[in-house]
Image (cartoon, rainbow, N blue to C red; front, side, top):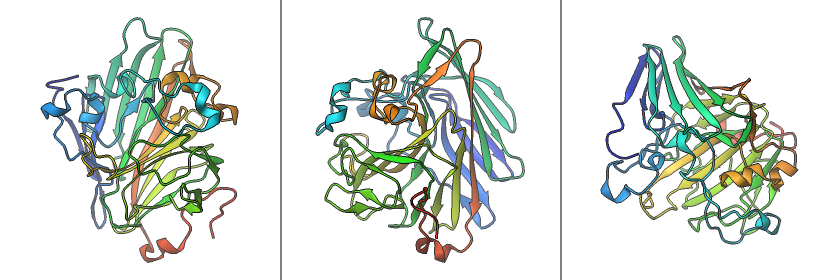
Length: 357
């Protein structure tokens, strides 16, 4: 979608402020008011969405904001060094548009109250999806935002779906710590575009602080950013609780909680100064923490196929029927961090084989 996408929609409450764009129903800005001052944990683009040089890009990239919905989730495209078990899946296929209509079309504003926004998006008549409804409700007394996505369909179908919050990595080196419990992690099964992948291709792991590295040994992906640019993608399957990002330098924590029975995985997209083409220009610093029912960010047919993640027991698509729309609820919440000086001393990434000490 090009041109005027409508005026931003604002909500201001006692413990924060936000701004939503009609394009992609994108949460473009979110600031929490904590006792020691404002906390703005999300990445923002350094480019202008109206730049003529970016006109061919999908709308979600031109306006890249704090959080948006992807249906069907996935981008796809040509890849190098694909792991053998993944080669039959034709990973070069693409979603058109990337991350689906939800992330790129202009939504209709149905309700704008002091504490709540509701937007809808009707899909084309031939599509299995009939309508998406997105609701954002602020918590009057807390630095928290409750979100809801309702998926109505015309016929029984399976859909890869994902949520796409992006945190800022423009923070001091090794000052952002991730806490996540999960059953099994997978590194990207091909070379991540950008030439700065740090993890080994096509491996699994049980702890973010000990991910197999491409150069041998391990890399700690629970502690970011690194000194050198990097571009990495991993998928955490069977997530067992909220994912938390500890901003040690700021003394604040962002928590992302969601219905993990519907979205059982979390994709981590670490994009830190490695992509040099437009619009990235070697300057973008973002960490996607993306709850998904999908197979990485591959095109829809890969998530619907018998891919290695589905074969290992984690669903990579959602089943939806006209009789029972899917309702996905999730929450973004912030709090002040106690004991900031001890963050680096406590292993922040946890799983059954990587207990908290």
